[in-house]
Length: 446
Image 1 (tube, rainbow, N blue to C red):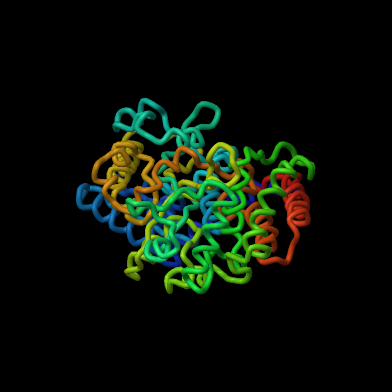
Image 2: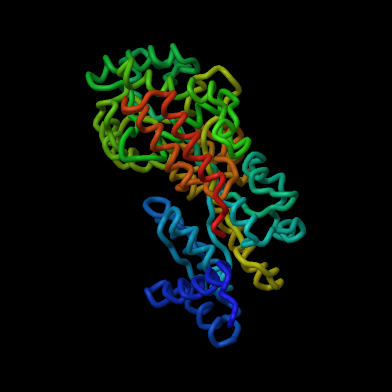
């Protein structure tokens, strides 16, 4: 009797089917690769296939950057494919790579790179190859590059850092007496001063001091908590037992502040979703808004009098803020031949050089020739929080961790209950400990 196929054999087969289905479903950027996989022929030498998960304003700006690259490189046939954000994207990328049909280059959140690299699904970037295209390590934000480096090898080229930030209505902040003589927001870098400022803002708005998503959203409560926990120097995943998932005392302290803001001080609403929080701020019913910097496009379009700055240091420790980075990776299990690699690296360098376009959407460029430029520094309010990139805290490396992951689903659900007043901080932390511990004891599916 023939041996039963292994899980990896099944995944390889599934990868071929997924890649084939993508092409049949209109993802024409995969067509050459899929066809060559079945016929044994090599893909066209001038084709560059690129996968990403960028929608909304990010998607629009990426298409602008792709068009600029294509104009500069008319001899290259760029086939760019945008797939569904989150776990579906990473599943498809993993299966396509296991099935020997990956794109030439792909976007990955930096928090997802350790899992992909650990499963042998990525090729590292060799220093000599990067240097040949002018991408030496000292030209990148160090914090992001450190996270992209695993066992001494660079597995990702970070395009940006996107941190949790604080938006504020400049007119309402002025009315609340929160601007200095130069028109800048006064420092809110302590818990009591921050809460006092939100009370003043609440009086100025007649509504709320600030707005943050508390229901129907798992990512925002996690970002809020992890920023606070990071400022306390809190560690994660020190083992797989519940008591090793995080440091309970620090975690409870961070969660307690979240509850204080909504339930006790009532300066933030307890039951509001992502869109509702945006609407409160956009309609001047809150003076502050806490979210990823990518929402800058929403408020620029609305002509709201607003600015942005770093999420404040509320816990008294070394400054830290939750963040992730979009990065470029080389999916595949075999080294690239020189011409293909140079085509990919030329594309990546073009994207880095266009970081001004990318920064207009709020993301901090990790490419220092752009971040240090006068042109970037003149972009307001996007450049106000650029130094947050070197204080970024990334989700811990684990197969179930990273942006849009099971980790964030478990933790964000519990912490959303804290913000909404449904769950006590101690109970939420126990819930996180137990839920993440179960994931930590489960083998990686790839």
